[in-house]
Length: 112
Image (cartoon, rainbow, N blue to C red; front, top):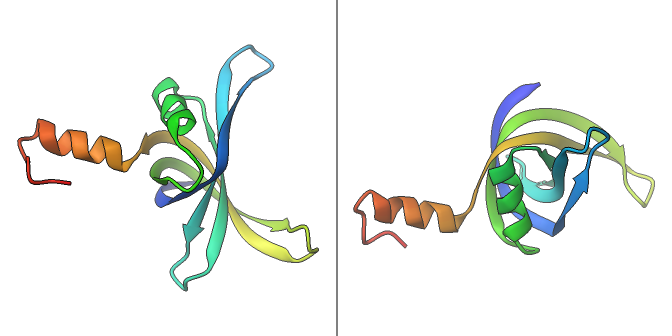
């Protein structure tokens, strides 16, 4: 696994589920732009309560930054092509809303 910080836009809506041990989790898809400009699809799962709540509050297309354990993968798309992708176990989820409020708390009232 790779310790990573990624940012992108939520693709679709996050979904909550219950695991075999009755522990809740949340899954989501995030479109991430690679260094060469290609879009990668990142499958996200969160077990942390705060990370789950943040993902569930987001809507399709919202910007998000996530920190956690990353695993590169290759998946087969609906058109049969093999494409690169990412799997991330999110430990922290941050949005523009969080950044604005942290700036205000730090006394930076000019921050948008």
